[in-house]
Length: 376
Image (cartoon, rainbow, N blue to C red; front, side, top):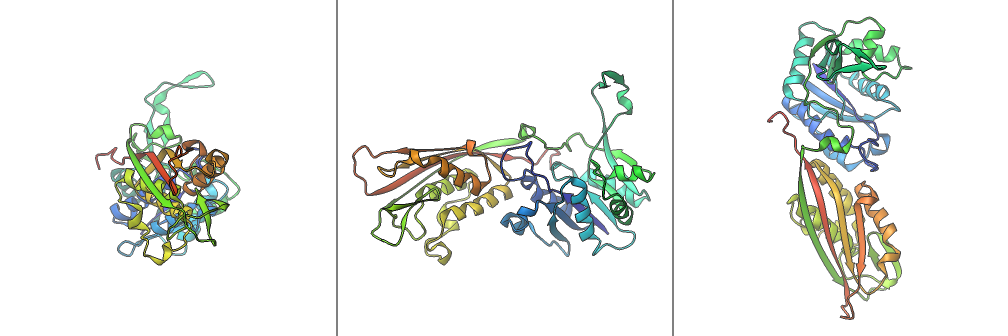
């Protein structure tokens, strides 16, 4: 049997200052790649940051395909700890002679051919198999030239006899190696190189996705009139206004969030807010609209979309939006796990037209990560 360990416990801070780790953009696809495309893989265990263990994106990514499984464990303080946590979980199922592939979540473009090259070498009797590409650039170390023919750039997935790499991880728990083959070097275990793939690049910065994306725009609108319900207050972008009457709505009537949700769905071509949160459904009654954005974040991730920027215009004579826009931006950013700098919120008055409610307009720009570097 072959198992897969995916260390995905980092913060992705170099990719984005967002609170949401970048690897979640890739994780669902990677799990599907190993479980769905590689027949001999029995299960995948991914290590994720502890704060995200109960995230709804992960619960939606948990899957079983023809008896195969996907599980999540808490990541460690470094990559090696995260891999060990995956191996601990796999050890509950693995038997003598089984194999494990260890693949970094930040390499989403891994091809079926590369995975099968590593597996083939393992089945031929090799104990540790590592994909590598050779330098096409000149190389200097400490400003001295080095023959580039002897330089190998190491990739993942790295394949191992399971018992071997599990015991090495237990033996060298106090180490913090950058890859798993380095543990083999510590015990003089021979490592076999196979041809890697230049398209199997590691995504470190958001700019690494340039050339692998397309842009999508969306527009949303919502409006509600003021209600006479004294038990509820106005809510906009998650901010409560205790001295202003609420808007007539089944939910909390947060027109700004509703228009934003429609803009997100419009950009993805996924319908409208009513199809996801129908007014006649009990979960929508008195619901906190800001919570709906968690579902939108999951939908964005499942469809490989990244938010470029959001612009929201709230049309009302009161309250004065400028006084609250920073906390509004913070609420939206926290719900979608994006930077506040990607959000603009502004207020416009009705210029004396005396409308009896509040309206909101939202526009959004998304970019979609395309998964076809191998023509797949």
